[in-house]
Image (cartoon, rainbow, N blue to C red; front, top):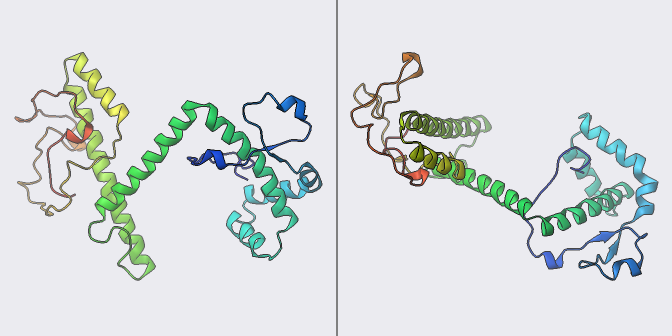
Length: 252
């Protein structure tokens, strides 16, 4: 279904030896005898031909947002006996899944891209739990409105940390004179995620006094229009993981 809607579903696959592959019947046994991977199931072409128009109408309904995909599939799954349309969707999905499995086996870059994207998602989930100190996996608020406020606060804090990381690294890059060190830092930034929080004291105090609000690394608010160099901001930067850049400071 995702294929017809214009985007691809690319999961990380395990147990590939147990996956089922489907093929069209026009491939003869003689043609398949030299294949390294031989599918052991056939695509139900007759079912697809008979119900293709209904399948396209379903896709159009979802694309035009006449009805949500969740509502449609909930209704299709509610019947005790699988409906013809549901079987058609499944038959078409078997084609797309077989093609994806073959690509997944053959293309190293595809597997790397999927792994990289999943790592980003998992990192984002860990980031959310780190910010939500106390009960990171559940809402303690009973009302939906309060839960939305709690989620918005969590998101705001995460965005503040990410923004500070960008500002700090941009500041360091602008002040670097040695091109080799600058290239090393750029490579570190490129190979790591900006969603890092090891330098943040999540259990710190909320202190908004004038003394604590003074800039300690040379990053001034945007309205000042310029950037001053602080007395402790001129130390030499070496190539270390992103988590090692930046001093500890209290929660925002």
